Length: 288
Image (cartoon, rainbow, N blue to C red; front, side):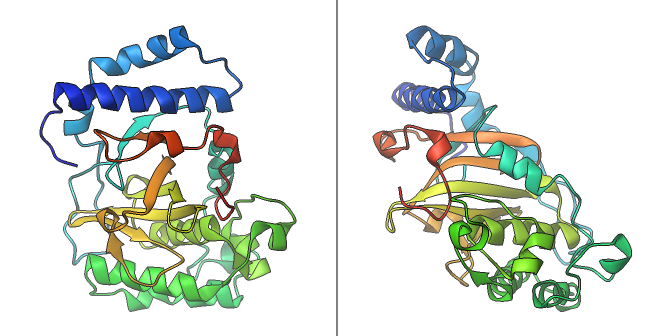
């Protein structure tokens, strides 16, 4: 996103988009969302809309495991040409917090067994564990490309219904090792923990739930923030690309560390009317 200030028209459109997103968020939480609720909720954002669009979202910590890359200083959470706004009580937040409740940074390392993790000798774990030696001396992009391809080949794609018997389930690495399969958010979670084990910080990694308008599916990917840009690690492709290359991806909500976000858009860049009216129905891998 440009670092210039929004025009009045852009700011107005952005606030309308945020209003729609707020209605979705409140509705998903079971809270009535009338006009007064929207005004009250948006009041803190109205005076800051142009500032948030111009200001980086957070400081990026150095990556000790990737000495060849300079530590990026700032990044913007508004991936796929969107604007991110902090939101609480998102339906999928519980799934995300459960998936990262236990620290799995050692699962893909030689310390796996000493930490009493199950599945350390599985094909899934051993294949991803080999990344530690393979990434030495690689650039940021080459490292992310290798991680994406390795995890994509480490387990089979199967729907949550086929693996767990439910429509949506976010597995942890031990569960993935046991099943040897998962769907899109499981691949994203596996890449998250693989990169955490390589030294990347929480703030550099963003799980994004989105609409794939081309395939008419809800989908999940991992976006990695680097000094060179934001790269998408996607289970449907071994090709590493910047987030701006995905015109068909429309972000709905995302998670970075403990924080949750909903996404809006400036101008007429996206059709907000096509966004899901009930965020609790957003299940990655299922039809829109």
